Image 1: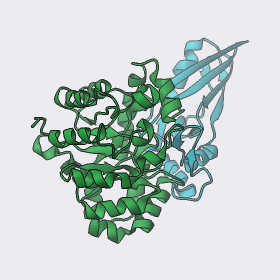
Image 2: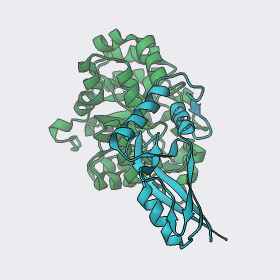
Image 3: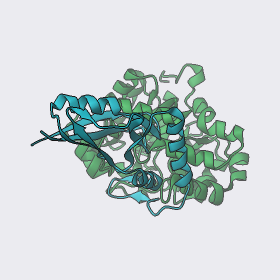
Length: 290
Length: 143
């Protein structure tokens, strides 16, 4: 199983590398509980049945003066364990964004880009600073993971993360693989519309708005979209993602299992779609620049 | 009269796990040098427990099965919500209720340097929302 969506903000070995990270995790990201050790983290993956997890930072330098874990720390974790697959983050409004992303991919071996418009407070459709970033991702052949919809951060602004802002990006970059988190809840219908039209649009399952994960996943996937539509139209585009540490990953696994999906669809969600997206069976991403 | 409190740490490895802590408790008590009094063993968490039972694998499995049957994961619990004070999904109401049913602690008399226990009594730390880094206390009070 592959978890496409984890933030290592709760791993003690990372928190202890940076005096400010703990404060930013509380004030900017909005997690207030205590971190746990890397050893505990692996036990959590084991219990959930997760073989590999994509870990991602968020560079909020312009909006909040901080990085919620650095690309270098992500690279450090991927060197510690092959169970981690690293994504980079850069601040789209930084003049160094393109150089930093290229370095993260070509030197650190990171496999994708994480952007959180609600936290980074940038305009997804800005052609001056955002589109060159998408162009570089296309050339590097790496996916972009967009936080979309509700932000649990106390300073997050969801209006920046409306999925309809992605439509022009999808049309301008038809080969760019785009992952939309949490089906962009509460804008589920709009996100679903993008997914059924564009096969380079993917969704993760980190739907955490209320009740238990089983409740909220059932409400969105089972009722709003419908399991038949999932199987018919999105079977190759849904990725298991937990958004750890917002939730213990085992609970998202149980939530997907509680849907009682066709075995082939569940296998696609838990493994096949992410393996294909991340090109895990093809020796990783191509890092050459055109 | 002396009062000695020792903190024992452990990494649990399962969602629900029953861990025999009898020997570590006895060794901790012996190290205090206290000969007569009481031994109090207490977990510091609200989704774990301390209990005493016969040290057999089937009893251990039955204990876990009983808690899952009496307090199922997919029951209706008010605690099923996003916990704003943590910034995380709580959704472990069943773990708290299982913990409440098992209890947080147990006592044994301490007599002439030995914990007074039945021959089949085994002390367990029960994990009910693992894997997590956990702590329990051994408090020895006596002379």
